[in-house]
Image (cartoon, rainbow, N blue to C red):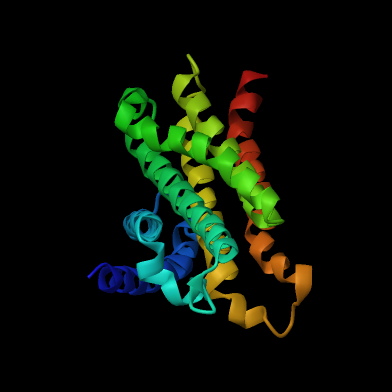
Length: 249
């Protein structure tokens, strides 16, 4: 029963994930405030929340019953390999981290847009709990990535920490600029895209580059979303803050 449910969730996760990867570019490239921008952004948000939630459910299911769901991959000479199990748990932790990061970023993208200057609804414990969970999970994921020599896991643990602290700072800073909600919205949208494209290249897209990139070069497509997305986020933040600085001078 659990294996069947996991299989169905995985199929849903993959189909919606592919749709989200394509849909991501519509709100990013369309004119801000236009009907296309609003509609595509709303659909993207709903789809990404479903993708993130299904990812969280699947990773928790695997932790609950790793042998029942992934038993064949963990066997060596008919026995469960402890080394394989530990490595598999680390990969599952990475997927959990990506799913949680996706959930936190896409929810913050929609939440900051809906609430705008009124941050009070975002300070509720139910909104902050996943952010604090990201703060706790990221250092542990970084440690596991270090033990298994997986730099990608360590990189995303760092991105997760920076993202969570940035959101918490936005929620708890006493006063923020009038358009800070817009900066938060744009940054979180890009952050959700980074997580989605990284998951695609790290897992679903590996076959596309298996013959072209070998060894440590295989990590290059995994890191490309971050190498593009992080500078883009910094650029967006500076661009959106520029009018306020100009008007203040």
